[in-house]
Image (cartoon, rainbow, N blue to C red; front, side, top):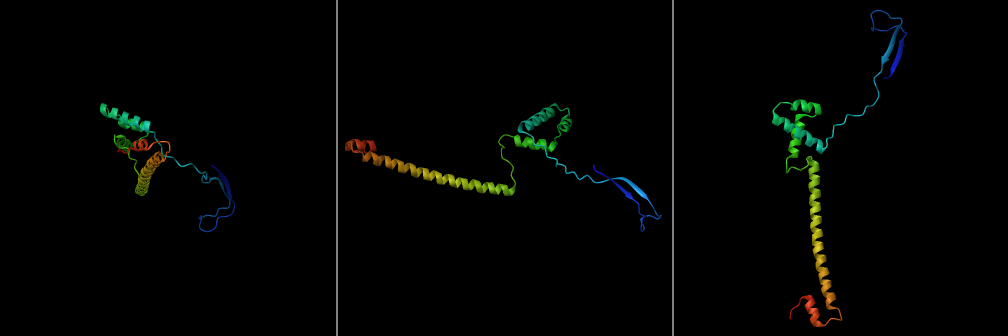
Amino acid sequence: MISNEITETEETKGARRATGVSSVSMQRVNAPDSEVKAPIKRPRHTANYKREVVDRVNELRNTGSGAIGSYLRAKGVYWGTVKRWEKQMKPGINKTVVSGSKEKVLEEKVKKLEKELEYTRKKLAKSELIIEFQKKISRLLEPDQDPLERKSSLGIKE
């Protein structure tokens, strides 16, 4: 903290005081603290920590001793948070919660990627047909084979 020493020597003017003051000394007036403090960050809990807390709460719930509240206070976790973690850990629920606008962006991106995948699959199928056709042509144009061998290698029956 920074402290300033201010001394008032003039006589007070106006209606500040009913009586005149000739010399008033004000000792160490505290100035406001101008230091910028870092914002408090919310705790980020790992999946293992969440699992540990939820499992312990379930154990305490099964004992029926009523020690859940003291356990949560010791951990610094609210009951609603534990309930949310329990919902997230239910089997089959792996969906990340996303706000409305982000969800739309993700849906559009998924649609775009699905279209791109379909286009790539069609292109691959065409490429495979072309390669197969080129193989057959190259077998037909080989000069050292007799015509019967060519037909059999191409799968042509007489």
